[in-house]
Amino acid sequence: MLELSSTGQDQYGMAFGGDTLNTSIYLSRLGIGTDYITALGDDALSDVMLQRWQEEHVGTQTVLRLPGRLPGLYMIRRDATGERSFLYWRSAAPARDLFDVATAEFFDRLARYDLVYFSGITLSLYSEIGRARLIELLEKVRANGGKVAFDGNYRPRGWLSAEMARQAFGEVLSRIDYAFPTLDDEQMLYGDANAEACIRRLQAEGISEIVVKQGSSGCLIATAARIVKVPSEQNVQPVDTTAAGDSFNAGYLAARLNGAAPEDAARCGHKLAAEVIRHPGAIIPRHAMPDLAGMMHARSEQEKPNEP
Image (cartoon, rainbow, N blue to C red; front, side, top):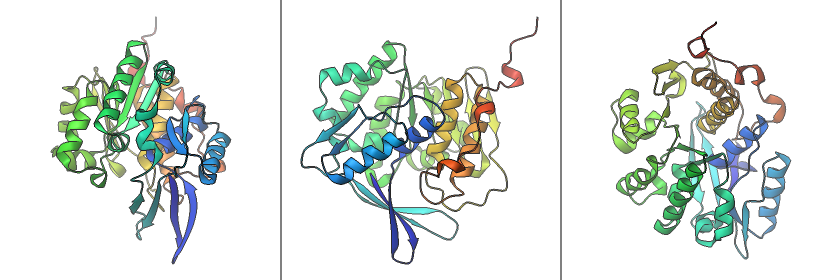
């Protein structure tokens, strides 16, 4: 979507954003070959968005263009602590119709990806038919040996009811390999008492790797081997928390795809997120990107193979 972010009293700057797009851009910046899958209009602003994504080396060959349509838009307002609130204009966004207009050939292409990442906001866009086609895609990806990552990112305004959101989430959770729930969101939607309860619920769905994000308290990682807490970066003064979770997910996934252990991947995620929240807007300047190269290939002592 187009993003309007406050730059002062009654002044706004225009950029582009959206939770999955933010993660895609940060994955690309971290050296992961990434395509973005969505639908846009054929207007000038959509042209600008495509150009900006290409400048970030995000592949756009999987972006469908719908004649006569305009992109969605959202406005970010921030309080004194950097926490933000949103206003949305996206009821007619072309992205909502992605799976209604996608061809069989388009689906076959998507099914060959090594990793597909989406969120609860993604789910909130689609009709029941669109969600059914998404589920079909996830099953094909996994059947082909690929993996699926999901960030619940529950936003009540995107759903007619919490029950509808729980039903939609329930339809996809058994098709997930990496889960990135945020504890506050999960408590709002499911009433989880704590991170451990969230983990138990998601493990019951068969999810093998779960990273429960808890803001400044760090995260709790659950794998088949164990559950471990990884603290967040300390002494960070946030300017804008937009894309904190999106960038964490990118850092974590990039590290895991490079062979890092879950704890080291979480440290990468925390380091990137800590830098992102020091800047206004979802996407920080390229020069502000932290150097994660060494961390992305690290292995925790517990995960290192035994010495001969």
